[in-house]
Length: 317
Image 1 (cartoon, one colour):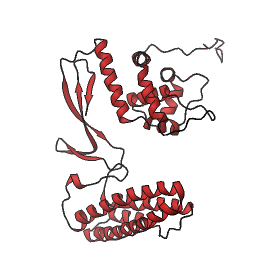
Image 2 (tube, helix red, strand yellow):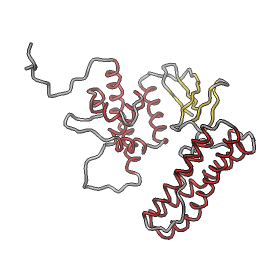
Image 3 (cartoon, one colour):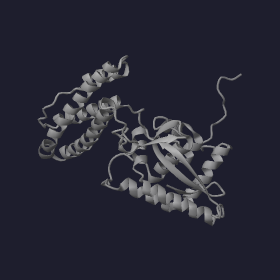
Image 4 (tube, one colour):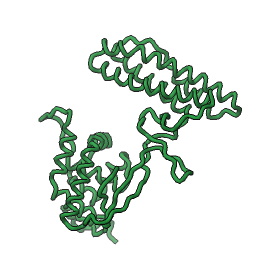
């Protein structure tokens, strides 16, 4: 037995004969036949950016679009996606990543994919429907409607974790203002708020739990007061960066007040707060509370799909 094979390695990547590889090739042919799709993505990537002839070469619009398709098809996270794009022969060829390319970092891939707007995805779906009709894949004479839940990327919401998030995020923005030279007078209650969060979670008696909640609410109100007072100072004394941080403070102050109000009503006053008036995340405030089959509760959005006889999705609401 030889330790190493003397057979010369091929210079070109050989696409494996596998159903998924053939599926990727079929998708690639559709994207090549409809260059307008890539043009739409390119517009999203360039919107609000200044073009420069210097610097390193980034991802092309075509690579961003194809990487987004791969992420959705195989359910990869942003952490695993860069590895699979460079490690897999089929995925690398599909995303037009050459052998000499070093690949792209997670931050670059995530930032670019997130710049593709919902309106662009809707336009892409409409063009695919037209393409399916022209290729006689879907006649549109039959339709089936189905609804599912798309969950938001949030932690399981509780009143105590939401209050802690408010204190933590507002303190982070206030500390950022200090770095830009703004004289912000506040006390960072993050460590104390975390201790009250743990006290709520591990309380054995109702009285202990409510006492921890009262102190956590006090810390949240105090931090909201610091942030409210710092907003005009940020707008007047920190330039463009201060305006951005002031807008961030205004956003989180409003959400924090809503969290404080619903916690007081539900925990201290024993009131049953309607789902429409609740907020389950300050990072994804658009998230809805959805009870499925009267048993399981999901946090996200209800998506209704219209599917044709060929299983092509013709509409999504």
